[in-house]
Length: 303
Image (cartoon, rainbow, N blue to C red; front, side):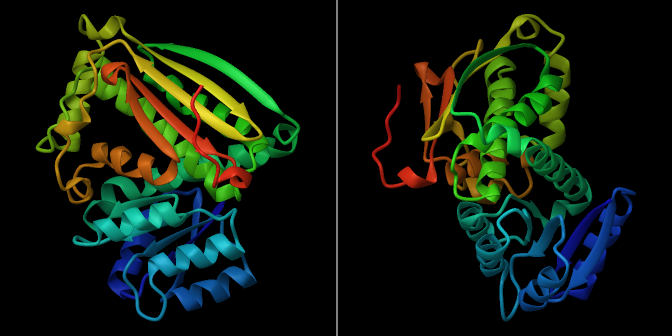
C-alpha cells in the first residue's frame, strides 16, 4: 500500500483530496497543514508521494518542492493548483515537481495522476541496480496504432534512464513523464490530427480520439521512437505519420488554458523538464534532449 502525504492549509481542501485518494484501496493517506509540518512528518516517516497545495503560509508548495528535492530526491511531489497560479506551477515543474492537478479537476485527475507517478517510480526503483551498469543504449520502436503500448514503453525507458547521472531520482521520473506526454502529443495531434485549438475539452479530445483510431487514414498510422541513452545525455526522437504539428496554433495563454484542459498539460510540462525540445521535419518529429547532470553547462548537441 502506497503512503501519500496530503499537505494543504485549507481543512476543506485537505479533506477533499484525502477522501478522493482514500477511495482507492492502494492508497493510505496522512495529512499536514503546511510545508514545515510536512517536512517534520517526512523526516519521521517518508511517504511514497506528496500531494501539496501550491499556495500556503510559512512554506508554500514551490518552497516545499525545493526542500523535498534537496533532502528527499526520490519522493515525487504533485501540486494542487488554484486558478491564477498556472505560471507558478510551471516554475515548480522546472524546480522538481513531478506533475500538477488543478483543484477544479481533482475529482477527475488526482487519483489517476498519483497512480501513474507511483507506478513509474516503482518501476524505476525495481530495476535501478541493474541499469546503473548500462553505459549506452540505442533503440527504435514502432507502435502501430496501439496507444496501450505507450505506458509499458515509458516504463522501459525509466529503467534505461538509471544509467544517466541526472542529478536525482526525481529528475529521472520527470524525464519519463515528459516522454510519455510527447508520445501522446504525437499520437493525438499527429496521427489522429486532433486540432490544437484551446476550445476543445478533455471529453472532446477523448471522444474524437476514440472515433479516429478506427477510421481511415488514421487507423493505419504508426508512432516511432528512437532512443539514444548514454552516461552523458538522453535523446528521444518521436515520429508520427500524420501532417506536421503546428505549435503556433496553441492557445497564447497556454498555462491558463491547461487548467481546464489536461490534454494541453504536456505542452507545458515538456519544456520545463527537457534541456531542449524541437519539432523537426515540419512538425512530424518531436526531438527531446536532456543532458546528464555533470554536463548541465555544456553546449547542447544533436546527432
